[in-house]
Image 1: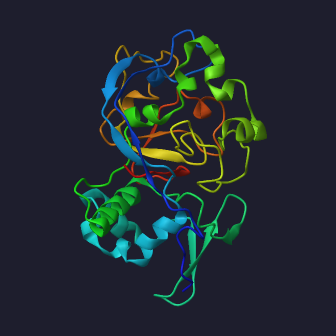
Image 2 (image 1 turned 90 degrees about the vertical axis):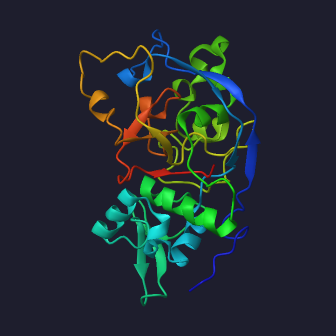
Length: 287
């Protein structure tokens, strides 16, 4: 089995400290684009200081969990996650293609169009259960006092560049309103809007002013938050069951969009949600 080398095949993933800060969630009612009903309303809050990985967790990092037998160890999994793992008999991420003798597997990656050698520097494409199991494994490996986890919606907003909150910029504060395709990559450092036909290395594109890469784009990012309404939420009369059936405590939020996200899904206002066992071109970063 070929050894994967940190800082060679995939980057070292350091933590960045963010100070406490205030923010307000919610899409303005007069924003001139379509929006799902859950995007509207408002929530003002103070976000505590936190430390988060500068990159999304890469395939190379996640491989260490696979190699260590993380899929065989129940102690790393939530009760629901372990039931899912047993039911599906999952042994590695679903888009990895294993070959070779048992115990000495090599892996390729199934992309949208072909099967390729795994780019170890691309983000790990996993569901919430797998992300949480990895967090538990990393906590055990490093003996950290505070257990690792994935982000919250509030923390994702804190990681964003301040340009997202500059009301004087008008619609230009949302990159999808003014930029598309390869221009999104070059000008904004975001793998969105089908700029590429796949993921990109977690360290390839421009970081935010705070130093975080891929806050938007590349892959969606799993949140700890259950999908929830903002204050003053109103059901959209033309589509009354888009959001409300999923305010059930069984859907996790995903934020940031992926390489294949366009339109509203690529917007700074997007608030999407899926069951924790789903795959949605989604990954995670460590908190």
